Image (cartoon, rainbow, N blue to C red; front, side, top):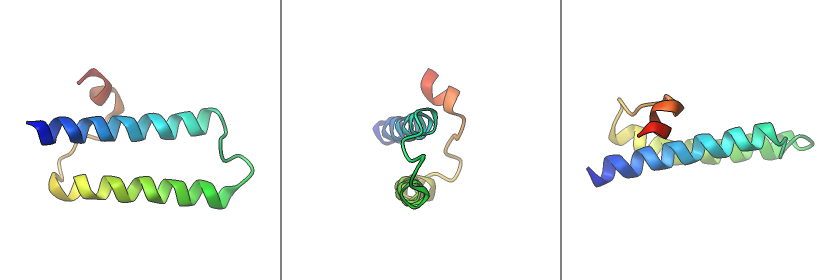
Length: 65
């Protein structure tokens, strides 16, 4: 259960980070940095998707969890 909780927390955190960056236009003037940052976040998620392919991608469910 701890691993599942950790997965949800990481997914929710990454979703929040991406939304924050988009809303505040963190990378508005540097497209390369935006792509690089998102690729790094995707690599983190790949670890958890490989462990649990059914890993929930709905941000609202993760927030409510």
